[in-house]
Image 1 (cartoon, rainbow, N blue to C red):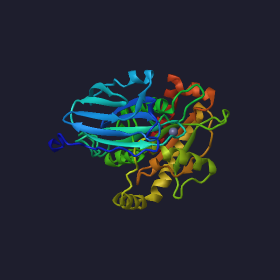
Image 2 (image 1 turned 90 degrees about the vertical axis):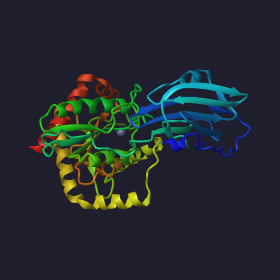
Image 3 (image 1 turned 45 degrees about the vertical axis):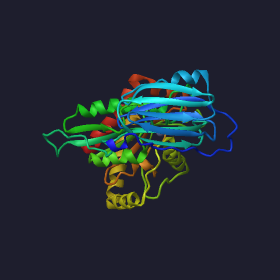
Image 4 (image 1 turned 60 degrees about the vertical axis):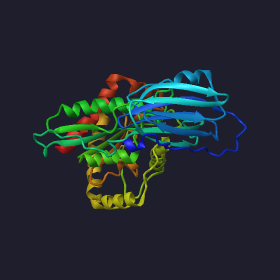
Length: 370
Ligand SMILES: [Zn+2]
């Protein structure tokens, strides 16, 4: 959009109780996704910053800042949106000048520390101007109606690592790897087509994952995760389906909380009234049918997972995950194994084991349709 040229996009300094203290910039992280680039800076509380956008450049000004030597190098990141970065320093005021490939819509906000990140975070998102709406992937012309779209949702991603294993493996990498293997098998099957909610290491908001399923008129929604608890002994796979009233057991509730709070990793829940109203209608539409169908799908997948490993729970568990609230689409969440169990962590990182897991889920889906 041309009219944005030269416009000062958002100039604001957050008031600070720490005005005299320097803000240390502890770390820089960049995540590129198909529709945005996310910049995350670990900062001290009370960071004072400004953002100016001019043509295809934006300047991030941070006052009273200190950059650690190790952090400095991480700043020079390039992707399909960021062309080049320069730093201008005036005393303790830093100006980070990002040369861009085009003009983007810039949004910024700060996040508080959580169990994965010990610092406050300054988040800056560069959104593509066009392409904001979620578009359905084109179905093949032949057999449009007969093609079943299977939405595969690799849990977490980008700034949200998911659970972290004993040997520091990240759930987000394992879920993506298994999801890609599953997608390959589905795409090699006549009459089926897989769509992934994410294809790389970036975060997709939970509500967006649902919208992708809806926009593509998905037949099934399968979210892939790896479990974690404090005890290193817990092991095995579980499958969760949606229940009408949220988690039915203490365990399901715990999971539900950890999955739903993922949006503190950057995407603010779009919860305007219109959305809530729409969600409620869609949600009420075919609740019953979906529940029995989800249950059936869960049983079929557990039957297969049982052949390749231990089951943590022998029947599908009920939980009110946000990702599973896909109206009219049978939806399940597979906790493939416990990443918090050192043995299973090893298994989850193994290529052949990942393939076995993907195959079990795949066979479960096939059997569901038989
Ligand atoms: Zn997870």
